Image (cartoon, rainbow, N blue to C red; front, top):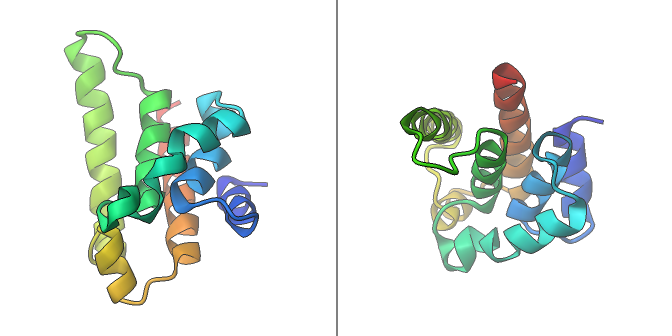
Length: 129
């Protein structure tokens, strides 16, 4: 089962968008499901205030875990920033925006956003590994 299907299954179990995407990428990030759900718990609903889409936030969290920027290494910083910016660009290109409140106003269902974010993050991760 790919990340898209795992993310859908998590969302159907009641987890928010960020939890669903981050949890679906555990085989790449090394996070177990419980930890992923805990870390991403407050990021649903656009960080609980309608801002960045939770699905996008979960994907960017996964990118950060796969390409860690944990020291003063400018190359590590540049790598994760580039991957995150490219993810966000593609997400915006597909949906027209990245803010949860705007996506909802435009009638975008969370399930579609979750599937896209999980699939794009998985593809990106596979390319850098």
